[in-house]
Image 1 (cartoon, rainbow, N blue to C red):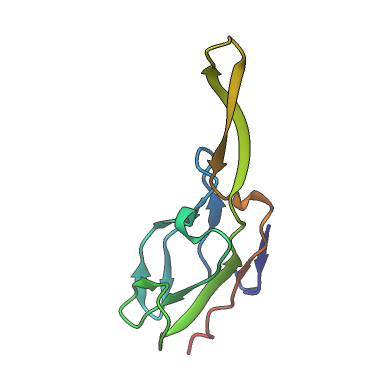
Image 2 (cartoon, rainbow, N blue to C red):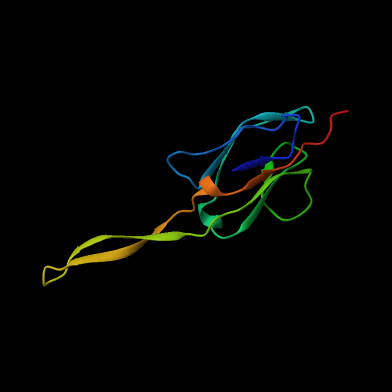
Length: 120
């Protein structure tokens, strides 16, 4: 679920990848006269974390802590889930199963997208 705080529609278009639901697609847009590129963010390795994505003065994205030009969006990445799958049969012919880690699914995650600063 996308929660847009920019009522002027100046932000990029955000979408979740249909094949890998841990990937957030951010469309290109303009910010302070700079063309901000299209970017895919794979949050697989951020399971269970609060993530903030910033824009830097040069138009690049950053997830590092520190001083940045603007907070673009933030989200709480869901934790891994597990599903049980078949894993062959044992020596007695009994079917075995194993738990397999499933990457985070952003489909039901609230993603807060912040307003860009007013243009002068």
